[in-house]
Length: 222
Image (cartoon, helix red, strand yellow):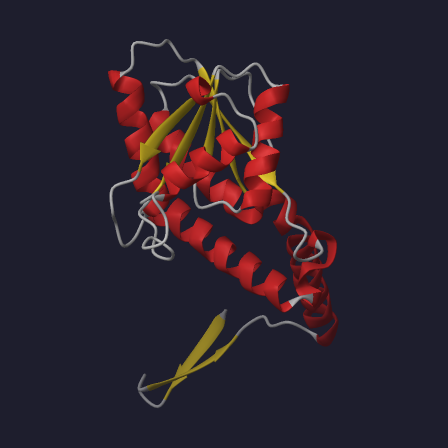
């Protein structure tokens, strides 16, 4: 940038480089391409499946029955020795149920679906208003520390685009005590992941989880 001064140095005239119309169009094209790439790639990024060789499968207890059924199939396919369920207190239906938290309810559902009772570990999450995943991970980490079993690897089974954030939180809490922490996403059928922007539910879920993940990543508030 070049400047000129006049009137005893009280005023200054500046002129500098600026974008031409061609340059502006090129910049808009680049921005558009970046936006398109993000839109296309954000679902597989958030709904990550990157399992490891693990002895333990962890299921977030707030998951619905369809997710729990698929988690059990994963448990039966793998070389797992234990299936851990987590979850906070029930906020709906607690007066009608003998189960008072999602961890117990998920475990009972899995047993009903055919999971052996002696393979399930129920780890309730302390009642918290925020950071429930972090509270669940802490509860699981505490159980591992108090357990006599030698566990080298775990996989987190979670819902769709929530999986990336759950993976981030559990890795942060469990490592290096647990050497390998993997993640497996249940891909939802409530919207089309390939065109999530055409569904109001897809837009709501994707944007909410993307913002929550970035917040956790940048601030460390899990």
